[in-house]
Amino acid sequence: MPVPTDVRLEVRILLDAGGHLVVQHLPAESAYVLPGGAVEPGEDVDAAAARHVRALSGSHTLVADFAGCIEHPNPGGGRTITMLFAADLPDDADIPTAHLNVPLVLLPLSNRDELPLAPAAVSAATVRWLEDHWPTWWGLPVTESDPWWNQLRLSAHSLRAQLHARRHELADSDFRDAAVAMCALVAAADGTIDAREREAMTQIVTTDQILAAFASDDLVRLFNTHVAALRRDPAAGRSAAFREIAKVRGHRVQARSVVQFGAMIGYADGTFDPDEQAVVRRAMSILGLDPSALSVQATQTVDR
Image 1 (cartoon, rainbow, N blue to C red):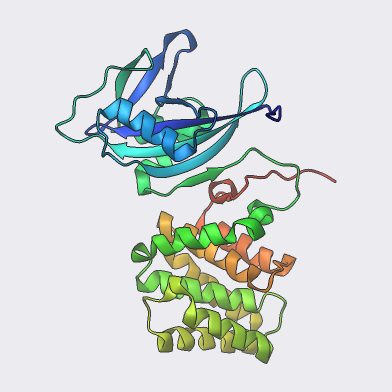
Image 2: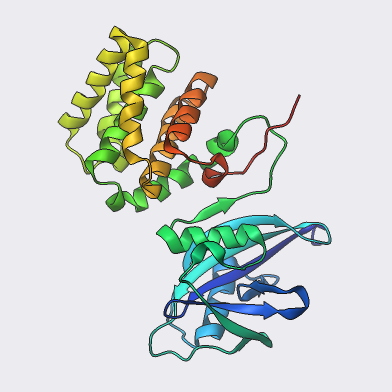
């Protein structure tokens, strides 16, 4: 017997038709929405996405990429989890005019920041994907005082998989320098770096697949330089490390990746303690990142 729930699961398709976004127009609501619909009973999400892509494109071979999972409230109560998938309509394909008996129109993608899509959370995830093809996980606020990493223990493997999948975009010296600086700061977060911590962090720096594109000797040299500076003069050492992190400010993929990498390193021993969290918060501030943009589970701070 199905368990009653106020959660609705749906699939929406971000279909790019030569610089235009294929959307449904809902005149009664004065809104545009991405085409798609509910996941049917007994149907998995991938099958639902394939069904809608096939109906929109007329193709049995067009494959959609996972573009995000967005949780948002329903106007009448309850909530919806939207699984977002993206595909490019082939140049020789006919542009669809309707989907599930709802007319389709084309929105130009020339100004992505002003896409009039509803709901707002799905619109933000759409813009994120169009800008850098980075999947979005966006949850409703939960009443926890911790920021976005409060669910990281359960999701660290997913974040690592994301970073590993984009490692070709992280293979330059600025990301290397920022990531190693983050490792040193996390290791020294409690004010000391003992031999065991140093050895463990050196092992991570030289073996982590996200940094596999870089020479291990260079990684160790950079890490040891930061450790020496932090031991000699902690304040100056922290400033120097954060300057290295600031190198990736303005580079969306690299900046987010450095912060996520730092959080995963902090959790490497199973406990992401307050001092380590403070390092990541400071890095986010320096990089100009909104904590909600990095959410595993979006959170809001509440007074206790």
